[in-house]
Image 1 (cartoon, rainbow, N blue to C red):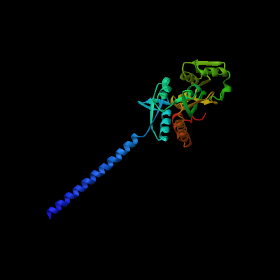
Image 2: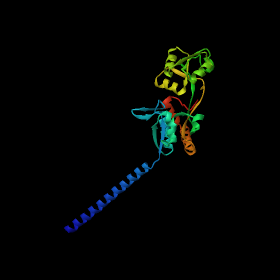
Image 3: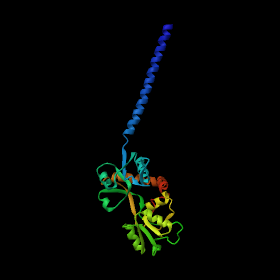
Length: 264
């Protein structure tokens, strides 16, 4: 009887061991399958300069900014793994043509010259020359009100040419910040600069300025893909449109600019 009991216990232990092994094997197979699925997920690599805050820049060694979040959301909606990378701006188109990345999402304006080398999507935001005034100024509400006013601009810029068409009192500065600081101090009446630059000065540096009037020119900032890759361009267009439709785009834009920069 005792021998029979020992034999039964031995058989039971063997069965339990076999079940444990089978369970571990099943778990390992599931884990391996999950890892394999992750490894097989195609990567969406998108490039930028990484030195253009708040659009794209490094914080604590990690790329961040509006462009990074837009590109990451596009990748997710394409069912791909997002991978933002940096490339010097002067060779960023050459990098795209050399297959270093799938797209450029780095605040690149779609121009006829660039369009000869790459294909552009629809714009994912609109910028351009914008008039900024000091908060509380009620005299200037449009470009027509700039006649006879002192306008600050960067020296030797296209904005200087625009300003000279609107007023005979134009003052050149080495940089946007210098002009905007003089604007806040009341030494000039208005500044003409890029819309995004002005918004960043207002939001990040806390300068008391506001944008007035319509854009003096329009920069359609778009995603660039390899020339002829219309399939990817259309997929990106659909991803961005879906972000606009469900409010995700505005949420990202409000986070970085306190306004929807798709609007003119």
